[in-house]
Image (cartoon, rainbow over all chains, first blue to last red; front, side):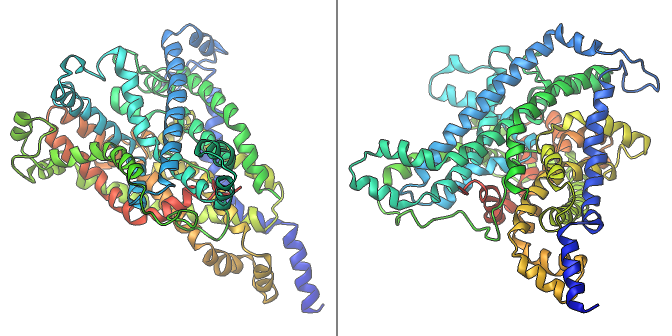
Length: 303
Length: 298
């Protein structure tokens, strides 16, 4: 057999994939299945038990955990908080990020530096963000109350994280602080890919700034909107670190979200089965919401 | 894994800074906009700025003049106190070890899978991709109970080794997404040419694909390093003893102990975040490029 036909055969074989492709794929796939897929699926099983997380034995209780969730007031509160959290920490950072991106894309000096600042909070550990804001909110020594007192609004100074009425809002402010940078970066990149000739042509045609924004900028940002919103929503369902480290779900249960309530059930109240059921519910919702994004990513890349 | 949002694909071998671009005219004028954006930026950076001014002053000065005043005296004692009480020598060491073990390994196995998906026409490629990308959406807490049980039966709950598996698994989806999109852009002719020269898949991978993918590998490496350094939930459930804690878990304990010592707390937070701030400042070109390259595509 000549080398040429040999090579051709090999090339054909490679095109069809074959065992070699699996040798490359397996290490990552094994890790992925052992430490992510398998645990996620076995959580489904644990959620059907009354396991306490410690003892060797447990009973299968069917859907009891899910039934208890329906009558658990904290679950209801956590679900509402999750929903509020998702809406606020997606909408506000996306709008603010878009505004900043449009402004930064215009005639602005020191653009790289300003961009650097807005994304800085996003690279910090969430626990440190929680510490920073916990410190800013400190009723006695915190900068926020100090500022309010300095401008004569003493009556507005309050224990922001220590009372039901403001605690959730206070944690969301910290989340907004850290999440504005990401949409801003994506929108900025997308804005720079819009053909500048379009604006020139529109100006010649007498279109106002506002008309240009709605008829050139916004349509040009459509792919970016999709990515930004999909990723922000996915991220918002994962909320845990920030709330846990700022309020532990308190005061009372005012800032509990599904993630923290799950954690407390498993690791503090020895109700691993019940806690896992909570995790299953939030995961199912998260996956359902993000399936269009996953599908689009797969379709885009799969040949 | 944490605040670094996952999953925008790089669009090809052209990761560049999304910096000053062709369609922005030379910035002359625009003073009004500059001022507005600069004021918002000032507001955005003020928590970190206050952290610095608080950390470098004595507690008595802070208490008597309040958090918004300029320090009346300067001291580095807060840092010394915080460093010792916060156990930072240990948590720094642990976070560094974890990063050095996990990140290179994760990037390498992800690159292998990405190569198989992008160039080897693997059977069930689309299905594998779908399942792996689905991992982007899975919240960590659905896995913590079984992962904890597994680690306990392996006797590695209170060790960094126990974290490597879960960390790898949750890093893989994003890394594969970015790397396979990049590797796909490598022209098939280059790979065919190497094949004709007699190179097998391994040699092609190591001597052709990896060197050509360096920009994407660097980006993924940096983003994964940030996520690993910042990860909290797995570390919280797995690490009990002070000797094995990582920076985020250590900082949480520290925060509890220093609740009424604002200057010490500020110093401790700074100790925890300064390395990542420095790294971000120097590497932001890669971070920004990695996060944004996908979104600008039509």
